[in-house]
Image (cartoon, rainbow, N blue to C red; front, side, top):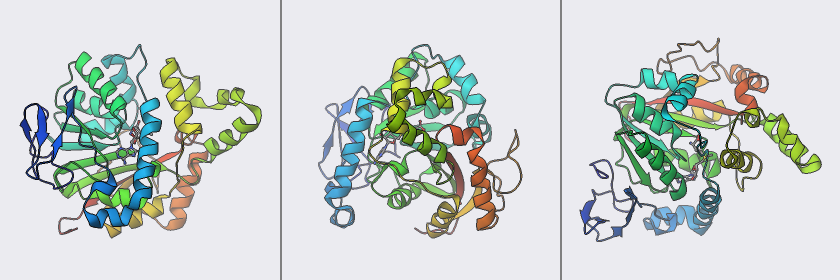
Length: 340
Ligand SMILES: C[S@@+](CC[C@H](N)C(=O)[O-])C[C@H]1O[C@@H](n2cnc3c(N)ncnc32)[C@H](O)[C@@H]1O
């Protein structure tokens, strides 16, 4: 089962049908399917004239450059020794456990920029959610799908798509997750707007981005790497873990040799939530107080003042998340009356 009512033609937004092993939309446009993955990637410039006028060819070129980068080194990749039990134990030790325990029952969950789909596979394996794992990099989706197949994980659909031209029905998802993705596009703000439209009124948007302060430790190591070479990598906490060579290579490339990355702040994302008709719910790092083991991530917290938020971000300089890439996560809830 690769199709359902939430997977649509990225150009017209209408439902797709299977004809002679291909997918077709009312407009006559046909899409291939490979390894049970619908290939619904469409270039920004192919979109409606209005979209092409906004993104221009530069947007499309950036998207393709980033796609080539990940086709060469799918991220985060799997260790050859990964199995479902070990993998679940590891995810259970972090944010994943809170997410799987607190997701609404039978939710539609979309991960945009899922990479090799660790989180999507974990959520599909441990919850009753219908999980959509979307990315533009086919090599990554294939790895995620192979892992799902080997471990008999059901309830997950893989989709190749461009997040600027989503192949998902607007307002159909209870939860949209995008972690470590939007800052690798030609425009983080436009990417945020594009996928926020997929969230149902009352649903949640979970977005993880590089933090302007939290990522300073990585920036510093990158600088040292240029001068002192590979031995500097020993300072990276992630690389002290047991990793297979492919996973190690994927991490080094993604963190130190990426063609495009930007950094953002919690305050910026709170503003974006407001502009897109969402209310701030919570964040990691937490703005006021400490993040508990059983933190209720979907329970609204105070956004604090802008100074409180900077103080929380400064804490990343000494926390594990600052050591491992410096991502902050914000959760917003789509306002019921939102018409965007
Ligand atoms: C750093 S990886 C993050 C993977 C995963 N979310 C994680 O946290 O491990 C970024 C991913 O975003 C995807 N990506 C970047 N731009 C995209 C776009 N325009 N449309 C769809 N996926 C995109 C890349 O293909 C890549 O797999």
